Length: 80
Image (cartoon, rainbow, N blue to C red; front, side, top):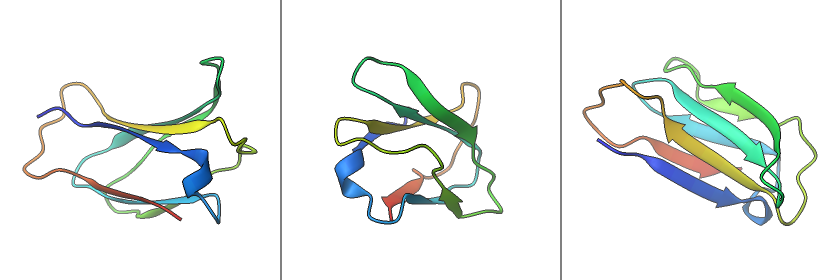
């Protein structure tokens, strides 16, 4: 199952992201020059993550399934 999503920085009010997933996901904050400002891996038992990087209007937050992971349902990801 393929799962990749991008959330524009303008969607974030609290610099936090909510993730509901049965497997770990890779999260990256990327600027308009494709430079990674921050990256981390989620854990199934944790749902709310703070983004410590300063988000510029042109940044995006990318959420990707880690290769080799098997999931029964699509993860739910929400900008907070």
